[in-house]
Length: 304
Image (cartoon, rainbow, N blue to C red; front, side):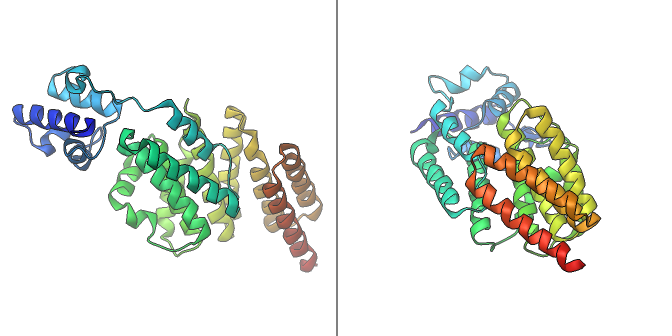
């Protein structure tokens, strides 16, 4: 048996000794869902350290009693590859998207057996986000992950995967029909989230806010778009994630273009975003900004 099966069998044996059903063990399912426990006990998933601590406490055991000689430590090399998925945006570029797919394939090949469900879900959501940008078809995120989506809407403080799920949902809402009340509920939840000590989380928070800003831009709700952008700028200032500054400037330029209809100010804002993109050496972002600037200034010219 591999270590997933060994750990899963140990947990199942100890739970049954306690006379607890899966439902009794998981209680309100805030720490651990029945589905997650089933997968762990069946040896299909490794528990995270947080979940393992909860399981051990519920069983009246130490974590070491459950692990024995096994380790659930994730190799450091995995996090180095995961960082590559988060460190830069694809901006819809086919080569960047393909490179991220290649990294995900490498991770699955090298680290699949070491990863708990939470990490596998992170990879799944990132892959779905990449796929949707290339081919916007398929089941919506709120339907595909219906149970999880419902849990997210009841939470006050989000973790990384919550943000990625809502980003996936918001990105889809740019292309498909959606329930406006559900979108608004999700947006309000995201606005309530603060930064954390985890860089992956903070990058995802900027990503989901950008996705909501884009939804409201598509639907010409420029005030809501500006709300998302202002929150992004606060996070950029707090986390020093300056690579996202050209993105917020682009959104602001669009607000000036379509809401204020001020050509001079819009052009200055775009020029600032373009200058930052040049300083960063990001040719893809630069080309996108130049294209958006030309389109928006042409719109204002045609209005007169």
